Length: 321
Image (cartoon, rainbow, N blue to C red):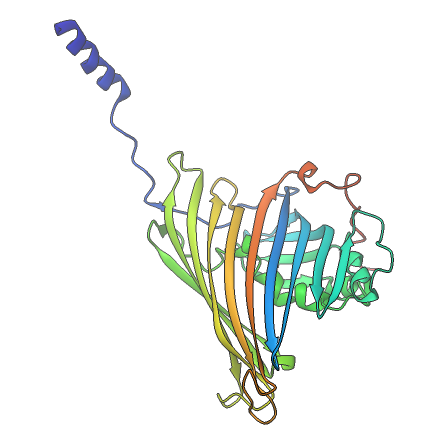
């Protein structure tokens, strides 16, 4: 009995006190010249529309591979980062029309011109200037990307200065440094959308929920709201009103490199359409509900399932002739 007790005491002494978990962490990117990181970004949506008594359903599935390379680290600790789309796949239906395209495969027969051009974004590099905290201050190359994807109906909405700056890879740009477990920060953006008669306002709240036992990763909770604002506040006849726009998600952050490991978010939106006469859903107006699930995950080049080693990036968009 005495020897067993002695053994237990010795074991406890050898183990020592439990290591204290980090109470605060630095979420800023740790740029290293020539570092290459690959991500897979997916967005799956399902829509249900009831307009003038007619019910319709549709959905889209967008899958993209992204390559990010640190071209150089700037004197202030920021960096120039090259972002290149390695592939894009789109599978969707709207208003009874099916559309499908995968840049990794031969074109589908009778592929609609409005979607076939989307493959032009592959291999066209964008150069982002990123601050030490992860804020994107400038983007070079969007004009060439748009020209390469001429004819595709929604490229400028899918890939714009606003959407690039809001990529989950830059989600910690407004985080305190350091940030304590339980600490919070927020972000807000506003995008003018003339087709909707106003601007979409996004308010995002982040919270550091915890740090892994090995202190290699951080767990971040995300909650956001979307709203559609109109000039003057009122919804003009014939315009669109956003009744609901809420999102929840989670992110895992690599503390060693200051990079996103993975993110997952789900957004529920309800939009009402009014008529010129102010009619409701059954009087020429309508309503649309949407469920959107987005994921971004750091992967290997092999995980992108490219037919070869990927598209060779085109000439640097900021290179002088």
